[in-house]
Image (cartoon, one colour):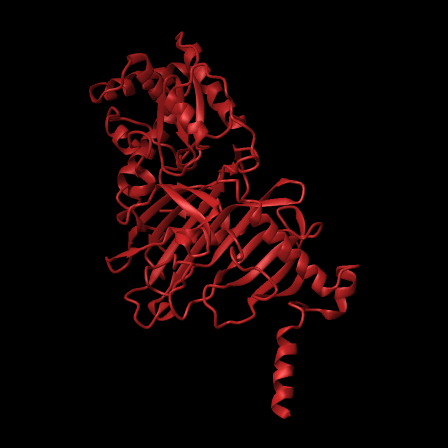
Length: 484
């Protein structure tokens, strides 16, 4: 009989409400009209409903990762990796019952998925797992799997919200989330996730070890969402920075590890505004980039770039109508033109030591357009013409910063080959090599500034446009989040 009572007691404990309050006395006033069970149910159902609503959205997923020397203050990368994919939430990964099938545009090859670490070895990464770091639990965020504990009211990014801790109900299961969530206090939708996944006793059958091949390593991450419609918050950005010793990883680990990186998701079909469909001055390649949602919908950033182009043309009395600028939403550094459309990547804009470099790079592209079909022989001539154009247009300040950028690229390109390798054009590292030598170039006062991949230009998943953020959204997304 005593044994039966013990079994019944265990069942009752397991079936107790999955939401508890750190301050039980405050629960009645914090959530008037809602019981513990009702509030938990709304949080769980809201998350599962959001994931179910992604089935027909087919967004793009981008991950940029750096491997650094662990346990040091040095920020110098050892190596990096880059992945870009299209996500189909209506398909499962390798028929294993796991949501989110990725078709890789870049990073699909096995060699692309290896990164050098501190001991000189190349560890394999599993980019399928980075999708998980935009969710609490993409498969099983429910009352049977997790306990929620209310912590406090909070404000995040100007939004009033409630903060909860999340712990697995059965800690023996691997790959479950453990951390905190922030829930907006109107419809109780999750708007921020911070934590990690629990180490597995053996490799998970669906959530890959994103950190170090067969090592039992998950990464701490901070993931934020954006409101794209009333009561609709969608994943769009995750930052991670994990520094672990081999003892913390596994008794059989070969070295300490440090990985940092960011994950972007954008291009939700049916959500962001449609791009300009005017076929005038639009090449097939440009139309394809637009169709694939790789180009930002034109906005204030493009208007500013177009203003610079007009200033260069007018002051140099050049009649070259129809030139416009577009922004490629990807992280690798590149600038090129398709027809009379000059395309700059988001990564290029974020790596510039000063915005005055922009007119210099645009003028070089204009010089190439004036010279006709680009060729290796014309690269130096394009630079010579471009530098003359910026001088007459009053943008000569940017020349010194442009050469500072070229010096930094040459110095660090071997450390970050995936950041500096263009995917749609020639590498800016190669283009910079053809620039004329400047023997008496006046260097900027802050020439010793570090090489930074800033967080200034961001993707707006609601509109598909680029926006400028002068202040970071979270402490994790500092402007100098990638310093070298």
